[in-house]
Structure formats: C-alpha cells, structure tokens
Amino acid sequence: TGYSFSAASGPLPAEVRAAVAEACMPPNGGRSILSLPFTSDAYRRLQDETEACLRRLLDIPDEFRVLFLQGGATLQFAMLPLNLLGGARLAAYVDTGHWSRRAIEEAGRYADPDIVARAVGHIPHEHDWQLDPRAAYCHITTNETADGLQFDRLPAIPVPLVADMSSDLLTRPLDFTRLALGYAATQKTIGVPGLTVLILRADLLGRAHPATPRAMNYTAQAEAASRVNTPPVFPVLVAHRMLHWIERQGGVAAMAAAVERRSAAVYAVLDDSGGFYRNTIARAHRSRVNPCFHLADQGLTERFLDAAQRAGLHDLRGHPRTGGIRVSLYNGVEDEAVAALAGFMREFARTQG
Ligand code: PLP
Image (cartoon, rainbow, N blue to C red):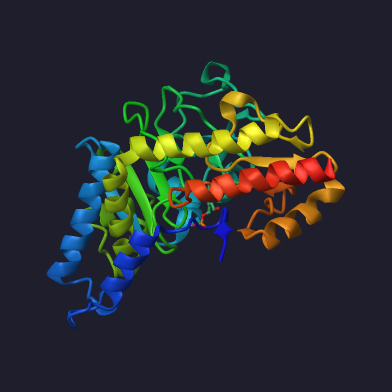
C-alpha cells in the first residue's frame, strides 16, 4: 500500500491495470493476449490502433514513421549512430547529465561524438552551442531523469534533432517542425518495460551502416511494420490501453497540465522551506517530471527516506550518482499521492528543521 514515486518505472492507473488483466484473462474464455501470435490479424489490429492513437495524441505528421522496437532506450544509444551516420563519423551531442553521457559513451563506439554544449544546472541556449552544420544529427535528452533537468522547449537547430524522450514523452506536446527523431522506452510514461517507441522522419531512412543487425535497422523495421522478428506483443497491449486512457483523460494537454500542477506542488514545498530542501536547477529548466533535491543537512537524508517509507511514500531515493531525493511524476501518478508527499515534506521540515 501507499504510493510509488519511482523514476525507473511509472505506475499504471487502476483502470489500465484492470483492462490489461482482462486482456490476459478474458472473462468469456476468449483468447488471452499472453498467447496471441504476432502473425494474427488481432495483433496487427492492436499494433495499428496503438500507432493510430499515438499519432492522434502527439499530432504526428504523415512524413514521420512510428516503430515499435525492443532493447530499451539504451539500445538506441548504439542504434542511432548505426542508422543515421550514413558513412560519416561526426555526430553532435548535448551533455545535460547522466543519460546524455550514457548516450555519448555508447555513440563513441561507432562515431566521433562532438559535445556541442554542456549544462550545469542550466541548459545553454542553442545560439551558444558549438554546432558543426556537417554533423549527421544532434542528440539531446529532453528530460534528464537522474538530474532533474529538462529542456523547456525543443531547440531550433540546422541539423536533424534527435531526442531521447524516455522520461517525458506524452507529458507535453511535441513540435515536429523541430524534431527529426524521438524515442522513448515505454516503462515510465506509457506502460511496461520491453517496448521502445521511435518516431522518425522518413527521409532519415536508408542510411544504415551495412553491418547493422537487421532487427536494429530502422529501414528494415519500417518496411516490415516493426515485425522483422517477433515484436513485444504484451508491452504493446499495455501501451494500447494506456494511450487510450490518456486520450480519455483529455490527451497530452491534460497530461501536461497534470505534471505542471504536481511538480509545482513539490517545488512550492522546496521554495517555501527556508533552505531546508535545496534544488540548484535554473527555474526554466527544472524538470516537471522528476524534481530532484537535497536536504541542506545531508545527514537527514536517510531519516527522510525511512520516515517517508513508513508514511507509505516509496521509491524516493535519488539516483546513486546524484544522491538526495527524487520525486518522479509520470503520467500514472495521482494527485492524492503528490498531496500526501507535499504534506509529509512540510511536516518533516517543520519537525526536523
Ligand atoms: N534515457 C533516459 C532519459 C532514461 O531515464 C533511461 C532510464 O531511466 C534510459 C534512457 C535507459 O532506458 P532503458 O533502461 O530502457 O535502456
């Protein structure tokens, strides 16, 4: 019992859990999703409806393709250079924190990653990036899940913009006039682990390195409707139910309003705490999805986490690299969870401060 604020995976709303359970154990003895062959018409319909719903929610233009892949966001760190360099070596990267560095490290195995800007508590404006227009693409991490730092908008740049949106896809609208490729593992904002959604402009296809494994080749996957091999049937089902739930709530605008309201409630506690809780990120770049903070007296961190746990507020420990506390507010988190957390934080500061 209680509430989870885990950064690794987001909670699914009760309605979505019930719909998934019903698909696993159909009440009238129908076919369970757990044994549905990917070759069946029923699965094709499921995948087509999932894509159509994602297209409606994000208003994805026709010239973009949607792929349903496996291997998590981490596999994309390698698949991007393999698929996009087209024989070149130069790829631009913005270093905003932990996850962008993981992407840069992995790209270094296939490309010459050029770090065009670094964020320290604040993301430099794109006019100040040292961007070589010959770069095959420029990679950003729209929301740094470990650091609590988020782009407040997509930058306007002269090379194809590639974005890891694993922790904020479907928490705000997307500007497709600025984006060439966006990808997200689905376990945080869209469902369960096992599926990675990739949205790319069709003119980026056809550039893969010849040694790219076929299951990792965007062009081969696009031509095979993401079924070069067996797709992740069950995670696609969960995404289908979650996307339709988002649509019933009022779509991405409703998700954006919710995450804005919930993060504002958390930041209000930090800002009103007289320095008891500390966040050093510039206001414009504070993450709406993963507010991170430290206790000014870091000796109180373990006591905070223990007391929170006893109050039914779980999974608040910060990323091991940053320490402190992290509150993840993915689409399935409820307002009452955030209200309980804010109340707890105020009380903790009052009694321990
Ligand atoms: N990128 C970002 C922004 C993340 O937050 C995460 C996971 O936390 C990843 C990539 C890695 O995702 P996966 O574990 O699916 O490879």
